Length: 84
Image (spheres, rainbow, N blue to C red):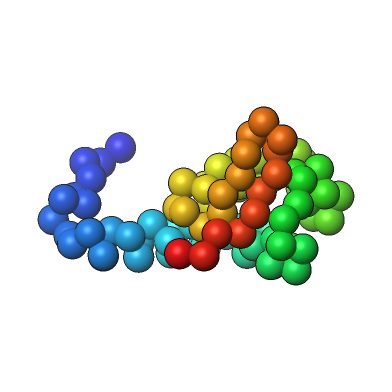
């Protein structure tokens, strides 16, 4: 794996790149669309809507959360869309 050159770019450039990476997968777009429609939902409801396994959905949620696009409480497994 190569060495990151993120330090060579502005905070804003790194933030936009992080968002672009999070939005670069069609499953993540579908998850965001579902969350926008429902305002909040339990992970199991997303699994019921998309042709992906629960573990795959969880990985996509993790990426969206790391990018700051969604927030959730793992204790209740509820994810809500976050406005940034």
